[in-house]
Amino acid sequence: MPPAYVALEGGHVIEGRGRSPGTARGELVFTTAYTGYEESLTDPSYEEQILTFSYPLIGNYGVREERLESERVHPRAVLARELTDDVADWLAAEGVPAVDHLDTRDVVTDIRDGGAMKCGIAVGKAATPEDALAELDRCVGMSDHTEIGAQVSVESTEVYGAENDGETIALVDCGVKFSMIESFVERGATVHVLPHDATPADVRDVDPDILFISNGPGDPENYGEAVSLVQDLVDEYPVAGICLGQQIVSLALGGTTEKMAFGHRGVNQPVIDLESGRVVMTTQNHGYTVDDPGPRLEVAQRNVNDETPEGLTGVDCDVITRQYHPEANPGPEDTLDFFDEVLSMTDAPSSRAIPCDD
Ligand SMILES: NC(=O)CC[C@H](N)C(=O)O
Image (cartoon, rainbow, N blue to C red; front, side, top):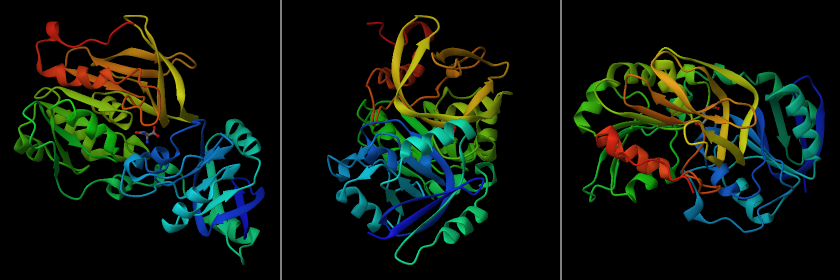
């Protein structure tokens, strides 16, 4: 196996075993998820990041197309203690460098101490530590990826569930996962997936029952078009969103977001619903959070570990959002009822689906 070098912000270089060749740079993050590597690796929210798996063995149940969440692998590179050949070969076919046989406990500790950081990687027979440092030198911060929405969004509208006769959703694609669309379609909805820079006229053409803002990579402040779309339409349609969607909706309604030290990435983040007291286990992948939700939104759910906002509800507008990933791919299925709640936004508020409390 060829050598591999991982250069961390500050200049420390770690050596590992090369499992897929190439050079890469990106924001170094970690996930604690112990299953769901196919879903994580194809989650567009990981665009421009280098993903470290803290779980030591990745790939032990193969790679199956039906578990992928988008058309390609999104992290720029992958680090793990041990990658199986199935995953290493898949990443090589996708042109994504991969490194194993390094101490991922050290990498995770570095990220926990220093926060998500810039990283450069070089893998290959002729790779050198200097190659990894050169990549690190060229790495820019996540907020400098100002066109990141365009990198992951559809170019023109796509329609899913056209045969359904339920609710119509205009979904603004900032990097949506397949299972999020599927969660609406299997509940009878028709989903029009619109580009990240859709205009109010594009949405009105769809004549939707609900406007939905998807998850996606990078800094929510770099999604100016989606922010102004929500500003323009929030009093015209019910609005819902997941993860980046929550952040965009909050920015649109006078709120603020901030970067977290190292974010939440994993499948066991506890969240409490402040009204019912119900606690659910959630799947998460985010590095930014809503700081102040703004005057038109209130916090309905919080992270039990650090109390960051996990769910927002409109005060004087019809809005519900989640910071976590209720589609649960991968992850515990405690939160699937969010999709029923969104679809019931077309009902009068008194007869809406509310989360079960068992
Ligand atoms: N999964 C997401 O939608 C991530 C949202 C945003 N890019 C963040 O890191 O916070």
